Structures are given as C-alpha cells and as structure tokens.
Length: 77
Image (tube, rainbow, N blue to C red):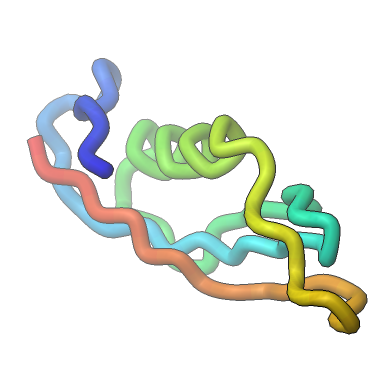
C-alpha cells in the first residue's frame, strides 16, 4: 500500500532493509535496520510504518517460536 512521503525526507530516495521478528501470536517482537537508505528520516519512517502495523497474522497451528524476515521499504519523493 502506498503511503505519503515523510515530511522530513528532504526529497531523498532510497531503500531501507529492515529485519522484522514476529512471534507465533502475531505480535511484533523486534524491528531493526539491516541496510540503511542513507537518510535517517527515511529509515525512521520505515521503522514507524512497521511499528504502526500492529499485529501480524498468527502462525499456523503447531508452529511455535518466532519468525524473522527481511523487508525492503523503498521511498521516492
């Protein structure tokens, strides 16, 4: 889903890669930067977007623990 460009992005473009850890219950456990976009404003906006997403789908029955994946988030002015 397309969101508006961050106000403090200063016209920067780039892709930030995030590491996301989600529990079997669908709750976000951790989010961090694997690879910066080169802009602090864009990196912060990507992290905020994941944090605002709230819950993720629960793991299928019988799967416990946490799932970790990398998510690229791209910005263009």
